[in-house]
Structure formats: C-alpha cells, structure tokens
Image: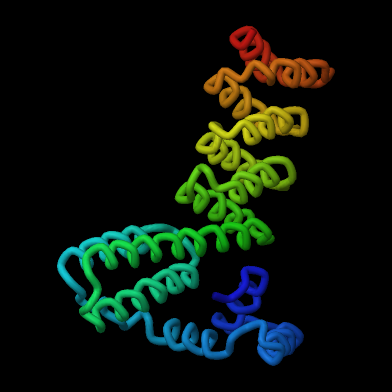
Length: 250
C-alpha cells in the first residue's frame, strides 16, 4: 500500500493536477522504489474506467455484504477520488474471491473484515489530508468523515483536538466539538477539550464547549470557565451561559 505521506502526490497525479515540480518529485519517488509503479498503474486503470464498471456477482451472502458496504460508501459526501479508491479496493477483493470460488465461508468473512479495515484506513488517511486543506468546506468534510471512524482511534481524536485548538474557521471548530463527543470516553480527549476552553475566542464555540461539559458532567472544566469569565469584554448571554454551566457542575 502506498505510504500515507505520499498520498497527496498520488491523488494529484490521478487527478492530473500536479505541478511540474511535484511531478518530478513523484517520478523521483518511483525511481527510488518508494512508490510502486505497478500499484500506481493499477490505480490509474481503476480510476479511468471505474465509472462504467458494474459490480461482479460473487456468492449470495458475500454479494449482500459487499453491496451494502458499497452503497453506504456511495451515499456519503466524500471527495470523488476517495470514493473511487474505496471502490477500487472493494472490486479488487471481490474479483479475487469470486474468481477463485474456493474460499470457505469463514475465509470470506476474513476477507470482508480485511476490506473493512482497509476502508477505515483510507477514511482516516483522507480525513488527515483534508484537515490541512486551505478550504474550510474541505476541512468540514474531514470532520464529517471522522464520524465514520472508530471512537477508539487515537490519531483521529488527536487530529480533532488539534483542529479545535488551531483551525481559523469557527464552523470547523464547532464541528470538531461535536465530533469529539464521540471520543469522550477517552480521558485524554476529555482533558483536551477542557484545556481548549480558554483557547476559544468565539462565543459560539465557548457555548458549544459549555454544553459539552454539561453533558459529560466534567467538573474539571469549572476552573477553565471561571478564567473565561474573568475577561472584561464578554457578551451577556455567553456570560450567563457559562455561569449556569459552572453552577450545574459544582
């Protein structure tokens, strides 16, 4: 599988958006053996003809599981390239299994589980990549993708906390608060959200964090909200919300 750190170059190549310098960099990586040219060619072939493909028909049980997974992927608002890569992985494994006709049911289940893992890894890769995009809309997509990843995923949680603390767009930070609630069983995530309170200047994000802390019953947030209240300039509605939050958590 192509290394995650090269995914930007690979996707740019597949979309034909690379600059001359990026293309030279890609060719250099191929020459050094860091990107497998045969794997790249397979991705080119799949992406070029994928829109006209029909899914093959493996066994009845396998077909139902795969089609359910693929329909779920098709219905989501992800970038077209990512959806194509998901299809490529699915069709590749389906072709192997359907072609052999030799896999026992338990082996078929293992293959399905393996595909699910690959899809999850692709989702995570796309999410991390999109969070660095200059467009707030693309970063919002990244946060939305995180909702489909396992709450126990440490990298996803860390990326969401970083977004909450540093993203320049209020809507993206607000979406990150909501997404982080899925990871709130993780003590490090809860502590990260508490530490983020005094970093927020937007009233709507402050209120969102207050709601989150109330839902979680997070008493450690009281001191952080008190620090916010020490600010001289604060909207009366926000001040009232924070005071009520503190009262409910004491």
